[in-house]
Image 1 (cartoon, rainbow, N blue to C red):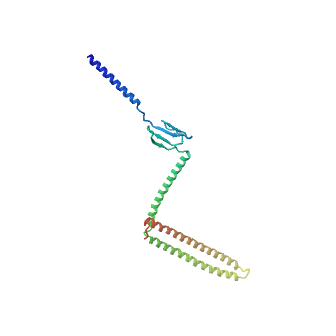
Image 2: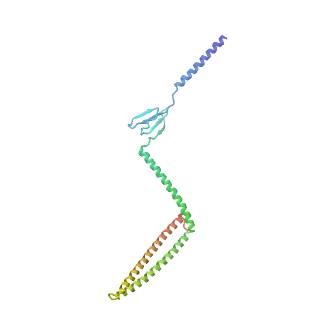
Length: 221
């Protein structure tokens, strides 16, 4: 019994000694920690186990325990750079919104053209009808002006032949002024009709171009 107890005490001592040795080895093992390299605003290079101060405007290099660069962190942006970045983001958002609106407008325009026309020939037929209708009103206005000019000339001759002091002179002058106003209205009316026809041509030209691009995908019919 004495021999067995002595042997147990010896084995326990050996176990405690082995555990202590393992702990010492563990403490002696190198600690895996990041090493930070950074340059301050004065150009001085620093190495530390903690990141560089946030006030530095330089980029940061993070090294592993073996001295290899593990990560490069860019320098923080200045106030001007942050403002520029925000402006660029806003511009990109506006451009995206504009592109979306343009796409929606394009789709709406295509639907409108498909409802209005079946072919390019139909656009040209509409153009001819508008030209005939407006051209007819312009011709009638020109004929009306010709009649008014003849009437004015007739009254002018009567006025010129009337003796001085004749009570008819005032009536002739009044009739001529009325005819001048009517002639001016006819001319203004024709200018408006020509402007209207020009606008119709411009719109139909646009319809034709968009119909060919959006509906026919660039093909002619």
